[in-house]
Image 1 (spheres, rainbow, N blue to C red):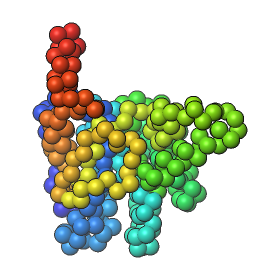
Image 2: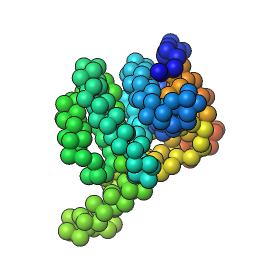
Image 3: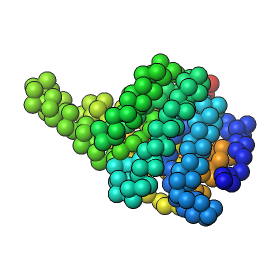
Image 4: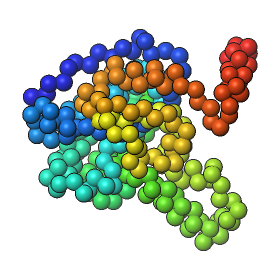
Length: 263
């Protein structure tokens, strides 16, 4: 039985500077299930419910991109029974959710090395991507068999191959070029990265993309991360000063100038 309380997000209180892109490390499903006296598979199912509600909340408050860390390249080390259960749940969720997400204008993407998944699962992934590719309400990116180091190495390999073919010279390899070959490089980088479950690390997630993201860590397990908790994370983000290498005084002066222009 799922004992999660109903989700009633405090959406009206989320105003002002809304992050364009939120990335989430969804941790704590197994521990949530254990605390409820349930098998781990029920924790993952409860976590899938939270993903669904988070998509709706982000779409309502104007978030442009939501990226979730669903399955890392290191997660294959988990017990085989758990991995198999996750793959079944993933396939079930795709089959069940794509109609609703498409109707709500959500564009689905997958990032990571998809080659290790079954032909059936890859087919469902590709179908959902093709079906929703023109949607513009929210980009929902799912990181599966993904690692930030893999992502950077993959981009470097692609560029090296272009240099070998003499399509590029070494002095043309810049940060902006590199970003074109990084996952989600065509989207705004994450402004806010949330990790649930109590650990304070990013665990090889979006290493390039999170360079200037604000990091938010909470003890809350992912299945209990309600809309109100997401609203609280966004409020915390809004109270931080994002300097991007500048001094606090420079940031303040820039904001005053922006206000004087009526922007």
